[in-house]
Image 1 (cartoon, rainbow, N blue to C red):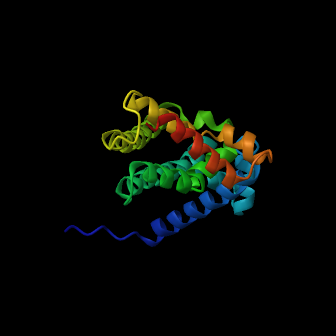
Image 2: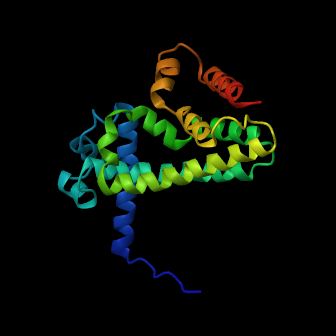
Image 3: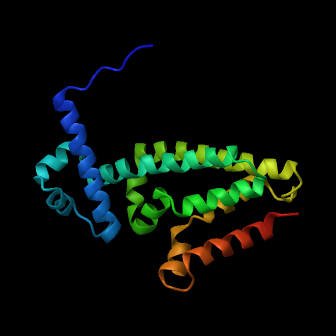
Length: 202
């Protein structure tokens, strides 16, 4: 098995600085949201010159994408966990809802939505779409399993079920209900689970 080449001291320092910048940027973005966060502010909070920041990330969109992409892969990993979860297809989907509602991707997007649409344009959008396609494929697989077990209504197209399931994670709906104090987070999750499965169960 071929060993990976060791990083030089300079490469390791650059990698560490980049991770520090990303962590700093995430802290600022989670407090202020995408629209109200500037590269100047990120640089100031990281204690580096603005020019140094641009050596690592050419734009705010590129920086935010570097934050979002691994979180989206984390969502995909949760879908894989759900598929392997020991339980019925319904229990797998409930597991997925509960875990992702507290997951890094949902929490980050909820704070920055809807300002960061520009992050997902062009080549970055293509990359994101590939991951989303894999996520939806996994969700479709769980729903198909539920249909085969006669838990879910076979008359409803599986792709429609999967798309409706993804809408559970719409940050706008969550914000309107939870952030505005209409319901607690736990109640929101409970209501969402109840309403969703009432619509698709036989």
